[in-house]
Image 1 (cartoon, rainbow over the protein chains, first blue to last red):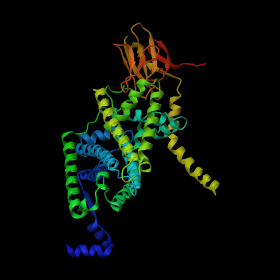
Image 2 (image 1 turned 180 degrees about the vertical axis):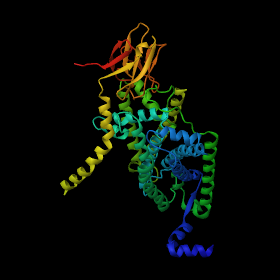
Image 3 (image 1 turned 90 degrees about the vertical axis):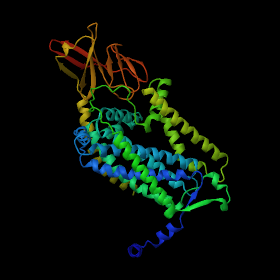
Length: 356
Length: 137
């Protein structure tokens, strides 16, 4: 073992990496549990990549999309499990990404020198949501069809450039086989090509700058701060959490298999109680509320402006809140974050109560 | 220098745009139909509706209890979901965001829809129903 290690270290020039791994430490405090959520998202992403490749073996985008997913779900051995694991890992992935993002936000881990880590993370989140939106159509069942129709009305509402963009995404004036083909190319080729290098940069920055201290720890004198070695102490805990995540995906996939609805039919009315996945529920409910207050498309327009503005503000938080120790701007930022969390939770619950 | 770059961008971008836009152009042609004949639709019972495609768009033909016939575009003007006729309430309903329309005029009655549903002209003849795009102006 030692011989193999030294063989690899010498030939691959890993001396620097090993030395850095030995020196690397992770802060230990009462908020340390939040450090694991990025790793949980990563393991979910790996499961999605592997199950996605397996699904690609049988999936046929285009006019046969629904039939191929029906075969995967009901005829191919363990096809239902692979598909279910793909969907459940996507759900847990987005959940862990949100938790990771909010923990980074409230620990103020976006301040110098970690600004690019925040920006790349936000871009990864947006790409992750686009993965979710594009993947949702691929089975071409009725829910997928109407969710995509509604989703593509958003770019369609942008004056002048909106309709041609929506048409290019759809490949038609209506959602159909061309849309599935395009969304598949987006989901399985274009998005991974964008996502993987960005993920590489994000992970490299995390290694480069290490874990950030929350403001409550920053104020402590250095002698009172505790750390644990990254290798092997933190890494062993990380692996344990990864195993828990894998088990959670396996249990959810096996006990709650992902359903396949009836085949999409443009002549069939939208099913009663139709609603988006949980990660779009807040926006769905907010648009519904605004649509009830403002007549016509004004509600949607106001909603879209609010979402865009909120997202830009959220993205630019490292530019606004730079103070160390936390001052007035820091407290304002935290309050803004608490407001966003509250709005997301309330509108999501409200949305689910509304569709019951 | 900038002009050369722009020329290259256009020379590469235009064929790609046209390539990606081909099925969109085809669907625009398909959507431009002026009328649709529905064989045997004259036998549609009173108080019921029939879904059909007008070009590439879903549309609805309703035979009302008072023997009047109405045909409307079946895509909700709010977010594009396919609407349904509710014979009990005699109105048109969209399940996505709860919008409702008058089943005779297509006027938006409640909920978020910003515009009425487009109304078609209906001509019932023995053995078929002819649906025609309404002439404006």
